Amino acid sequence: MSRRFIPASPVPEAPDGRRRKQDRYLSRERLEAGLVICLDGVGGYDWLPRLLRRGLFQGGVGAAMVIYHWSVGPLGMWVSDLVLRQRNRRSARDVAETIAAYREWMPGRPVTLIGHSGGGGMAAWVLEAMDEGCQVDRALLLAPALSPGYNLAPALQAVRERMYVFYSWFDIPLLGLGTLVFGTLDGRHAPSAGMVGFRMPANLDAAGREAYSKVTQIRWRPRMIRDGHFGDHSGCTNTRFARRVLAPLVLGLGDPGKPPANRQRCAGIFWRAAKLLLVLFLQALTLGGDKTHGET
Image (cartoon, rainbow, N blue to C red; front, side, top):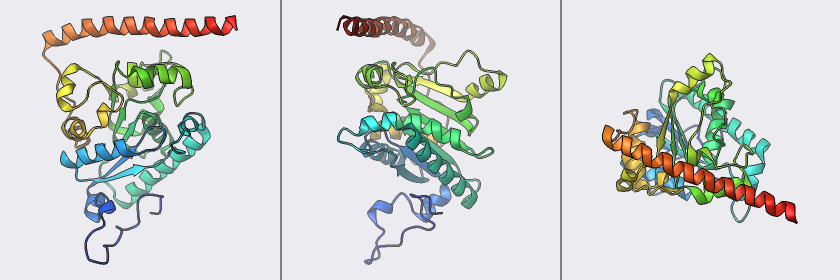
């Protein structure tokens, strides 16, 4: 297995006999327990996946955890990550081949794919690139920078159990205005699914609609503040949230608990009103931009 980031065997110990610090998540024991692949957002800074990985470790995830660097790079080149779609598709294929090779090397072990922001879009493309019959157990799309109407059905064919989608209506600067101006990973100039959630395409066949039954969408709620998530773009990757919320999902322990019914009804009314106001605001911005463009 020489697929870029998973070695054929664990990296040997340092000369003094101690395990190298950077390989603590890729030990032979961890590789035999399973595999978690993390994809960062555009820009490739990778510091958010490091916080997430630390939280998963603290939450009891014993599998190997790898951060795959797919981005062109920082310093303004993050725009390239949004527009170089053929390059991104090739990177997605590389990850898909790595998963297939790991499955062959370690059959029966659990595999989880996690992507944040642009990495959430990349995670969907990784799943689409996987060969028929090869699946991950779970996929976590954290604030994905894909359009809300993006068809997840092909990606869901490569998910055995469940796909979790975390989104927040307060992610306005990056996944609202940001993707409205610069576009989503799939090239749509609109608020991202990481802000408003995914909607099932209307033209799906029965198999596609059945595939969507694997999707659990988890909207940000104020009670998540106690877990360290304040509704912002990076909140779902911080160490506390990863330890308390994401680690149980990776371990297959089920969906996060729901609030009591009365609280849920009140929250639903609030969120519908907030959603309507935000949509009207974004539409006003779009119309204003079109008017300005026409006057020039």
